[in-house]
Image 1 (tube, rainbow, N blue to C red):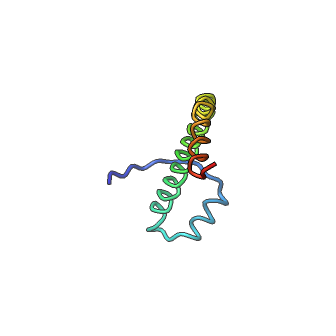
Image 2 (cartoon, one colour):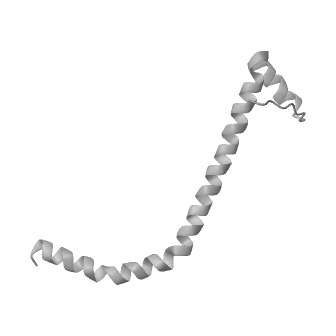
Image 3 (cartoon, helix red, strand yellow):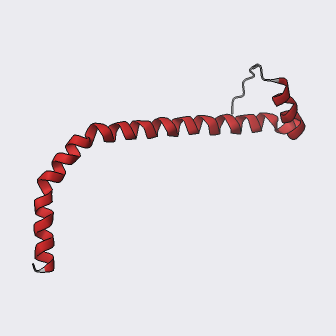
Length: 83
């Protein structure tokens, strides 16, 4: 894996807690895991928004299909129950 060094400014208190809690040799790994989790959460949230938007866009089509096939469903149910 290709590693790159970057410099970011963080609040002193955050850094102190991080450096106190995480051993020197593990810090890059922990930062990597946190960034990956954050990026994945953002990707999943964007996907969720896109799915919801798509469903809203298709709502009229779904309604038309329901109206078209509902009588057939009722007929199948009547025949199945013998009514």
